[in-house]
Image (tube, rainbow, N blue to C red):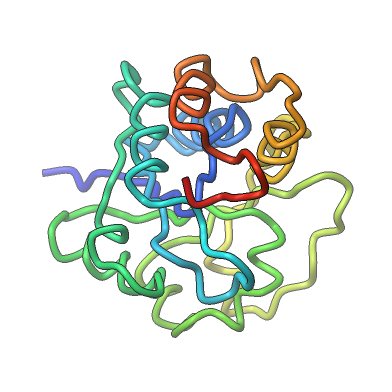
Amino acid sequence: MRRQRVGIFGGTFDPVHQGHLILAQEALSRLKLDRVLFVPTSRSPLKRGAGPTRPEHRLAMLRLATRGHPGFEVSRMEAERGGLSFTVTTLETVGRTERAHLFLLMGQDSLREFSKWHEPERILKLARLVVMPRGDLDVPPLPPPLRRRVIYLKPPRIGISSTEIRRRVRRGLPVHYWTPDTVVSYIARHGLYRHGTRRG
């Protein structure tokens, strides 16, 4: 029986936006993945400051954004686990439940911090890294063990970020077309990102 090819796309997704969806679609198509699993973090150990919006909101927005796409799935494993989210734990969990080749999707900025992640050597044994360069950043030189486990996937250039969406909502500016309309409606209905708060 053929082992499936599964992409793991972690992040805060606060909120999910069109850039995330396009990157996932590029990976799905160009790497011939069977599906992409979106895994919103509970709380990243590398991000400081206020925590993200509550997991139930971020999960709901992801489900709305990916509804109807047969290759996209949303997982609540990190949200249910709570506390700090470690990628190695997520990969081990998926590896125990599925017989699949795993591909970890990340931005180039994440690759630059990869050595600071929890058990990076273990991560490299569990999954290939799919790195998506951003903007005009140079691709950093990689040591041979890491280079052999990295796939560079250059996506279309998309100048959208969750940070800018939150900023626009706080300022009362429109975010239509930045994120799916279902997510725009959810943000408005629940009053997310207004008055300088992200927790919702």
